[in-house]
Length: 513
Image (cartoon, rainbow, N blue to C red; front, side, top):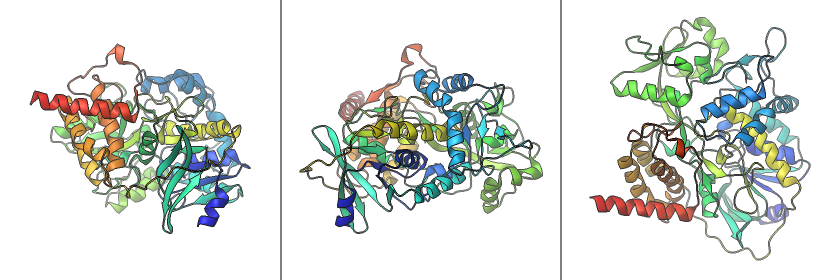
């Protein structure tokens, strides 16, 4: 291992092998790069689980400007306009690039790209592959492209535990493998490590989505942004599984309705009903469930016998749970799904720490604002994978002599954190619960135990949620139920600011008792 690692020293290092990470590696070719994957390619990447497609304004009655407007509307005033315009303008090129890489997108009867509708989009602009298998088929194509690219060296079953720093800049990564710990020197590191949904007990995310990249970046001194904004998907299959299978937004886009055990369509007459933004639908479901009802997604009239051909993956998931969605309503409940917050990056994907970039769900580019528009996540992952590659392309990666010693922390265990986050930092929040979460997470985050890194990511979310005394997008405070115009701005924190604010919160809480 030592000999092979030495041969890789000085190359750009990409942490994570989901869509954003692999796209970055492919766009850097033929420049040699190293991809560090926690699991074999495709097996634990949330990208491969994505049932929704990729949003792109391709129809004759659509435009990138309209796509950007929908994105900003869903973002509830916090989307970065320049970033949003850039990403939506590049959507057509993204589809073309993925098609060249081998992705077989779904076509209509005339041979053109089939365009679906999802919540909060004003036009049909969702490009799918294999119906509801978009993420899996896109990832398959990229994995095959990586295998054909000699310049990409993949090390899988590698758990990155720390970024190695010297003089305020990244100079390597400390990782753990079956053969032991190793340090890979590099002055160019990309965080593409995914999200943090598994900080909650009910989630659609892979087990490894515990905010690892957020903790790595924060402990290296990077600023994190928009951490309070966690998107809970309205329709996870309520079947007792962990993680919970996802029932795609596209099912509602095809006309499926939300009903309760009495057959009452409880969102009828509320704006666009089931096609309201995800945060609105999620809170409506949570509110109805809180009144003692059971919630179902009913596709019998809208799809019926066509369900299996339109949504083959979801059909399999439902049948595994003993449900036939063609003739039965699907039991659902909200689950943590996507984190709009992440490592704060500029329009080139650069973090506040020299030598550190971020893309994909680990990053906060400003595209999503307070609430991600459906199917913008895969789009952003590809666009920013390309942007980061362009940013790195002109920079020399090098090795730094005499790297400082770094001790590897224990393997991260989020089990204790999941209980705290689910109880206090969920769909509906208030000051009392958030303060309790901060008090519970603070000693874990700054301790030496296996909960430290997940607790640090959770603490960022809880403190940011405590600071935002309003409701906006996916962040809802029952004690501040309305949006405040003066708070329509992004918030960034580093680890020092986080610790100070968390300790102040704990002190203030104790003084009130």
